[in-house]
Image: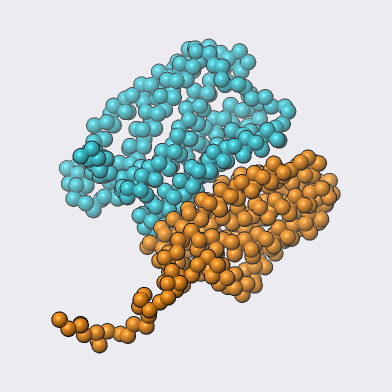
Length: 247
Length: 247
């Protein structure tokens, strides 16, 4: 028995046996997070657009309902929250898009690492470049809309917790629609009903703070929603990605 | 052996042939029950002490609302069966259940609005139950929209099943949060009637209507599923034969 002749086959650069155990496992959560963050930070306009949307639409509000300070203060918690929700939603469409188009999403599903962590890394980066800046920007908008002083800390905290949940929930919709050519409105349609609890407790917390009540209950529920979303949403999103890349 | 019936259930052809015998019975049962319930409820049940005759819309409103919610679970469960056991038929049932459920949700919202005008003096109130039903309607619409967006049926099946499952996890959370939101914002002028104590003379016609609606739902669901089965299997031999006989 001689070894089979392999000279006609193209040279193989690295068979699995040549790789170190670490390389064979594929990129882990930390490495993915780093890569994704570097990629996201290079696309400056993608970071700026949701924020500009957030500010522009809120500037339209006084033009629509009038500049009366009392009315604006009354509307501020709800409007800031709804606009933050829409800004997150609009930025979510591109969450998996470029990776789907260049095939790296499919590579991620083939990786020996659980897809859960791949999705979690992407969502974490999405939150770092949209949710976090939105939350940090919100006190400024509160100021423009005459939000009472008692509401600022709560607005910031509720948005920090809430936008993370929104990013996670939206990832499921983004995964389901990534194979479609123009998913924009459809994504909004399927994800928005799922956003309802976060919106209710987010605005509820800010309203309670403005009215001078304790708001720790609402923040605790927002944190609970975030914990549940972090555990379940990446699983559902991973399932959605497997369905979408199966074509 | 014990699972044989289960696998047979997954065959569209078996389903089509079996249900041919059921259809006339289901149609007769739902027609009879609905006719009896409607005549009993609208003609013979006593007037309500506070609401007079306007309460009689309950005989449509409550059964429709029951089935709207039950239909969502049916849709999600058949979607889950399809995802887990890769059963063709259960995906078809899921796809057939979506428009029927959306229609029933709309009926319950519409009759609720019609009932609200004489009772509360307004067509629409942001009441906890109404708002939850509205969100349920959006969840249905999301599934229908998603199913229409894919070019390949198999992809649409799996994506819709996943979305329906995500919605199922969310329904209790949405319901609870809307409930909490409503108790916080409850307007003082509106007092909801307690439906827990209903007189037997009104309850029995209502029960007849509910059972009648269940039969009607089963009938319509089977009809719609059969149509979808024929459409999907139109290239197979048994459908060709069936159509050949019909000619």
